[in-house]
Image (cartoon, rainbow, N blue to C red; front, top):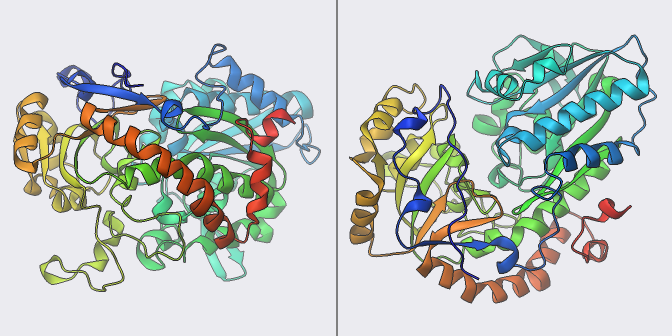
Length: 489
């Protein structure tokens, strides 16, 4: 079942990363590295439409098929429509599936309604030029009336909700109608905990900084989830809302495109899919006793991928991130507030980061995201002085290199890390599609642990996670086949 390394995600020319020409070696090129396919480790993973034989055409075909069940009668020929999207969607499988779903939505809406004023609004987080990069890369301005990136510092618009006035970004709502698009990738489990996962962008991607910060600095994860629901349920948003479209994602690829006028029905499917498709991978990563993590993908430090999961998930994987009865692990910069003088936790109820992560090799990752916390908590080796200088000048990570040492090349960094950490297990976060690149010793560990992990998730954990969210575990009967339930409808 062990195979040769899977090609890592292609480096990108970006204002947030080093020149790809400076990237001398990838983690997958290191000696002793192999790969495991997700479907080999867990054979009950769902079938995917992308990547596949049809290529990107499968995304257009599936989007058209699933949009046939959506009511578009609200939209008139002379109306204006904003298709709302989020930057995270463009980091999945290179971004083209998300871009193609957006283009297809535009074409279907125009064809069925006669409406020609259809614009794109690309929501983003702390990297305020990221959306512009995606618009250029995927030529989205050629498909929409206007295609603009919106940032949380843009002009806001007050939205009256049942909990008071919250603030959206004005450009997100400057049309007669809005269409909400996103994906089911679990990504920030530490925020949404698979509660109202589909609703989250209304308090993040489409919200002003004052409201968006409810997640980050004020209410904290879980408690902040009701802010997104309050915004979406407001009269202002409901008067504009038409439908939602989501890329339904598994660790091995895109399963389907799910569309619905009722976002809460879609939200239930997103929650179930996230726990069913990703629960075993998260639990398997949590079984690692010691390893060296290699960051090697064109994404910010906590958002580099391995097996469909981000590095930020791995730093909390020793704890069950889906279990709502478990406290939130303190593994992102957002939770630095949980630390007092001397780096001690302010409360015993906040567990620390995953102790299995002995060292991190920073071979390739982007700036534009507060990342000092990660280097401060895990011994870090930065590969290349050019990348070190890039991070030193990043306003959001000025202290990153205070906690990291520099190596001239990746292979030397790995040999040093093995000697200091005492482990030869290596896990590479390089965005490889369909599987995970790792050392043979870690692959052996995964193969040994996977059967027990699979049984425990199926029989114990997944039913628990569903009950905690008010869902009857019997709903899993509809998910017993490898295909997503609606894909066969």
